Length: 89
Image (cartoon, rainbow, N blue to C red; front, top):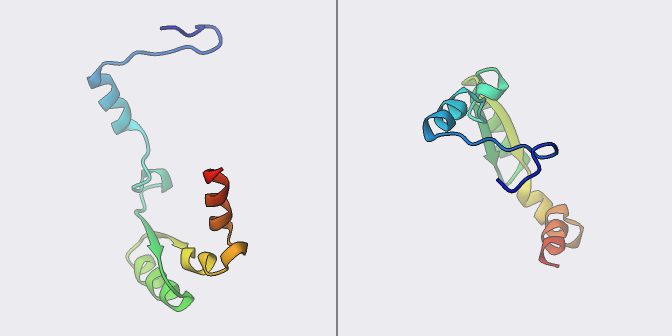
């Protein structure tokens, strides 16, 4: 379909085939980590992060803590702000 089949092969799937493939593929909802559900926590302080992480780990979750506000509070030194400025160029 417009691509060189030797360097960039393409596959055409029916809707049913695509649904079957998606159902068989690990998802970020837990299958990719061996079945454990994942909790992503956005918090304003380390104390909140520790409290929430302990709560979710007790429920069997794999926990990821984002320190977004702490990073953004660094102003010009923030890696998030730098990435946003780079993307705007």
